[in-house]
Each structure stands twice: as C-alpha cells, then as structure tokens.
Length: 194
Image (cartoon, rainbow, N blue to C red):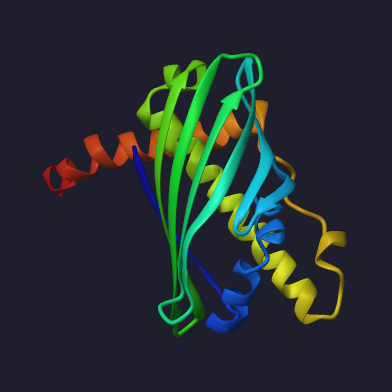
C-alpha cells in the first residue's frame, strides 16, 4: 500500500537536510519508534510499538539507508520487522525529498507499506489513516526538535507529542475516515442543493 504525505517546516532546506542526517534524531520523532543499535554503515536495529484498539504490536526490526542524495535532497530507507509474539510482519520502503518553498521547506514522503498478520486485518483505509496520524506527529516532533536546536537547547530534552496509541490513535484515524467518506459521498452532490 502506497501512502503519500507532505508537510512544511519554516527552516531552510539545508537545516532540515542536516536534521535528516542524524538518523537517531529522526527516529525519535516517530511515536513508538526507537533505534537500539547501529549495526553498520547506514544500518540500524530498532523497535516500533503501536497500539491499535485491543491489539498492541511490538515489532523488532532493521532499517537501512539505501540511498542518500545530498544534491537532490532525497533519502530512501528500507525497513523490515516482525512482531515479537509472531502475529505479523511489516516491510516498508520510505522515500523522502526536501524542496525549498516560500514557507521554508516542503518534506514529501512516500511510503510503500506491506503488512501481514494481525496488523493487516485492519484494512487499507484504517492502516493509511493510522500512518497519517503517525506522520502528523512525526512532523510536529521534528519541528519541535529543529526549533530546540536553533535555540541552542538539547533536542532530546524537548517534550514530544504524546505517543499515539489506543483511543487517541483510533479517534484521530476515525476522524480522517469520516472526512474521507464525507468527501467521497456528499461533495459530488453539493451542486444539487443550490
């Protein structure tokens, strides 16, 4: 499943690119994600924990930076993981590109996410919405860390968005689904009410 998202940062492209060069700092922005070891050049081991309703998924996995192009400001990351209790597996390919904008920097992200097992039972729409919620939190956490660094503070001491899980992630994803349904079924007919 392909999930595309973009967000903006008021910081310059070079500042955001430098931030993306610190992989542990980037991983710390994603709720539930933690890097545990660097196992080689551009390769990391880590965990991702996500609670979706009654199911809590704890993935152990690896991520590898496949390509990092400073001239184009693009990065490609492959990651795989397996649930600790054997309830599923995940594979992800992430492509991010940074471009200057009138507001600073636009970060475009495309994720190809493949799930099996318990996580896959939620369906494409719900998985897409949950991923969007996590990417929104990522963007907020990234901006908080960038602002802290610009102010001379330790980014690791900056409060992050509360990790999305359980009721919080479910409600936010449900809201996104309702908006999508509204747009799909009601907006095409709005001309009939005039």
